[in-house]
Every structure is written in C-alpha cells, then in structure tokens.
Length: 277
Image (cartoon, rainbow, N blue to C red; front, side, top):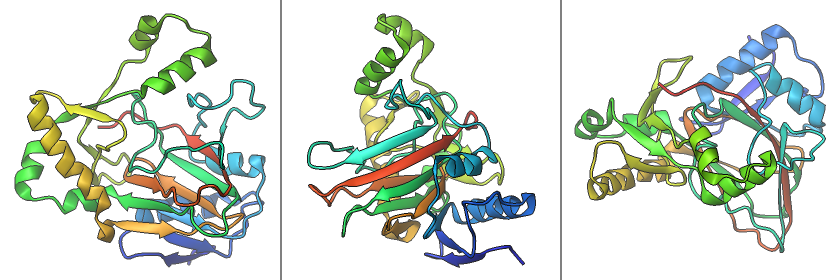
C-alpha cells in the first residue's frame, strides 16, 4: 500500500497523486513509491500544492542533479535552477507544438517539475503523449526501418544567441563546436524500465542519419504524427498550485496556446538526464 493515492487520468498515461504534501520532506519510501508511479504513468499531477521554490528543488533533487543552464534562464537569476515561463498580451512562449525538452543536448533531461503560479480562468492546458505507446503502435515494417537508426536534433537558432549572451561568448563557430547538434537513436530504451520509445519530435529533430532529405522528411512526418494520436495522450487543466512532474525520456508535451491575452505564469525545474541509448 502506497503512502498516497494514485488516480489514473487515462489508461495509457497520466495519474493524479492525492493525500500527499509536497511542502514537507517526504520519506525515502514515499519517494521510491513516487518514482515507481512516475515510471508507470509517465506524468504525475498534484493538486493544491502551495509549494515554494525550495520545496520544488528538494523534490527534484531526489531524482538527480538539477539543471542550471537552460538557454532561456536569466543569467542573473537568484535561483538558476528555475525556468520561469510568463505569458500575457506582451509575451508568448510558442510552446504549442509537440516536443521533448532540450533534446538538442547530448544528455537531455530526465524530467521536469512544473508548478502553476498564475493561470487563466479558462484555457492554457498542457497535453502529454506516451511515446512508448506511440512506438508500439507503429507497423512492424516501420519498426524495422527505425530500430537502430539515429536522427540529428538541432539547437534552435534563437536559443544559440541566448546561450552565447548568457555565457559571454562571441564566436558562434566556437560555440557550435562546443555544443554540436547531437545524434540520438530514433528508438531509445528507457534507462530504468528498458522499454522502447519513439524519440523524435517536430520541434527539434532535423533529419535521419544516412537517408536522403526527401526520404528522411517523409518518414519523420509519419513518426511525428504518432504524438498527435488521442489514445496516447492525457490533458491537464491547470489550477493555481497544481504541480506536474513528467518523464522527459518517454513523453512529449504540448502547451495549448488558446488563452491570449490572459496571463499565465509557471515555474519549472529540470532534472539532469543521461545520453539516450
């Protein structure tokens, strides 16, 4: 029997975790049970959690080192682990496309914990897709083609500019040599469960290694569409003090941009991951 309740949101992905207080230091046993829930459901939702930054960092730190070098994080932040995403009539985040966070790095994140600070009266939901189910749903012919193949994931040009300014670097070629676009397997194995998942996304994947551009584009478009299949998805309607924790290794997410010009403010911490295999 777990120390909290687990209520599935859909049969394939997402669960609400109840009877838990994230403002308190949780026991080792409870954290281990949370980890198992994350591995099973891919994304966990916690309601009515009036946590502060230190609570958020404590929760994430149990799972690994916290990232401090996201390109869009302010260089003068007192808490470099926190990525604040503020949207209103003057600022839009443009996260309304299916993606896996920061997969343009050699070691993409393990996962992220997002807390809602200010939420529109209606709109601004986030969707997640189970990319293990997305892979399982492919035909055997397609699986044969992509198993063992790699794809290149590219840095967004605007984020290169932000990262260079943040690091005080002026030589773009030198920055690119230090931060090359990595090759990742199209089908990666989860480092804890061993499950296969589809690991390409429309935001950051550029091309399949060893294929001509037309063939690569055609196959990638087919693979991208797997994330958009409703049976592989769950959807969260945010409320103030809702917290979401997702496994970035086997999911993609989409921030629905239907709330303009209302204000939406969320804060995220990200847990360092390993190189996909």
